[in-house]
Amino acid sequence: MGYKQILDAYKNIPGGMIEAFNAIQDIYSYLPEEAIIEAAKVFNVPVSKVYDVTTFYSMFSIKPRGKNVIRICQSAPCHVAGAAEVVAALERELGIRIGESTSDGKFALETTECVGQCQDTPVITINGKPYMGVTPATVVDILAEYK
Amino acid sequence: MAEEMRVVLRNYGKINPLKITDYLSVGGYEALKKARTMTRKAVIEEIIQSKLRGRGGAGFNTGQKWAFAHKTQDDQKYVICNADEGEPGTYKDRMLMENDPHAIFEGMAICGYAIGANKGYVYCRGEYPHLITILKTAIYQAKQHGILGDFDIEVRTGAGAFVCGEETALLESIEGHRGEPRIRPPFPTQKGLWQKPTVVNNVETLANIPVIIDKGAAHFAAIGAPTYPGTKILTLTGDVNNRTFFEIPTNTTIREVIFEFGGGIPGDKKFKAVQIGGASGAFIAANSLDTQISFDAMSAINSTLGSGAVYVLDETRDIIDVTTRIARFFEHESCGKCAPCREGTARLHELMWKLNSGRGSAKDITLLKKLGRVMSITCLCGLGQAAPTAILTTIERFSDDYEAKLM
Image (cartoon, rainbow over all chains, first blue to last red; front, side, top):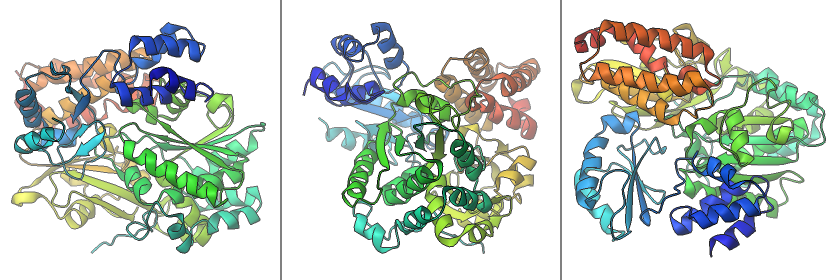
């Protein structure tokens, strides 16, 4: 499904723009400029207002990014459990820094605050799927699932 | 030995959340049927008498909130389930939604009946995509069974903004805007979602409702601490042997939580501090461990129960480093609407970073205390008001740790 069909499906839902953007990102991994301009038409608001919304929420990206979005929790419980070592291992393994995407377009690396899986820290999520108790050693196996 | 008491987690592990017949077979939706035979006022009175107070952190009397929305006359009212839990170390609402979604819908439908609302929303944080499927499936099944009657429930998904847990920011987000808090009053019970009277209740609060209607206000009010009765789900993280969740009566002490339920500190190390309530919570030292976790007992020691996250640090931890991390959390999550929070959270983090890297002076600590006090009074919403809490309480209770890092 393309962004036009998605926006069309949500156009009659009051406040449905955020729902539509979540659905668009599930497919595109980010919010393409054309989708933002189209959303302004569909929801009958200025383009500036759409950017106002998209840039507010940390899960929305208006820049192209890797297909599989890896987010590393930086909150205090993960912090004391060794999140920094996991960040270092991911950066080394993927050859990119936090905030970047791999050149083959497969992975994007981001930080996040608490994702609510604190029973086994540190935690990372890939496309929203949580991986608990991650170590620099297990990172390699986890990434292999997506390669 | 203190014991667990599962009231909101009554069906945990006992039913399949994706089979409504399982919920029905354990007496599910009986409380809704019972409530609908009562007058709306009698339902509200029952909740008021139970003394149930909000489990999201603010601790407001739930029945009183419903009474306000009931009294406001309008052609449309709403019930909203706040499922945007985001306080670091908290996952209680996820547990409830994963395991017993109908208990939450039943609570919402009872509220809808009581205040005269036929529409409800569950605002679930974007970090829980798997829950969206569970919630939507459960709602579909409830509709198929005709159990909710004319009460409709819709699920909305957040997109990664901690501030949307603040009820008016949450309303803005459902309306499709930036999640910036509104100036209150008017309160949501007068002008809420699309300016209509709205009750916003936390997931855990709503899961208590069917039990109160079913067993009566007196039964509930007799559990735990008299002014904050019932149970609380706590989630334990950090340096504690049992990093898991418990549901306990509200008169349980912090010591019991950490050393009995939590099994104490790993590796025979000593306890240093505990932060209760997530990043917004105060750090508590060993001399306050015999405090009960109830809202008022915690207030009495200038601390909070908050969301019920319990984050334990052992004697080897660098509390200044942890507090710096927490300061960064608030800088990141500040929505930017009001200046004291937008600027204040950035400056708090900057000063903490300076101290943490051994470049700070006593003057910086004085500045932190002043800025923190100003923010706690002048910020627009709870996020900014609570942002300095970890800093102010560590300066007060762990001053030696700050001294040791001064330039």
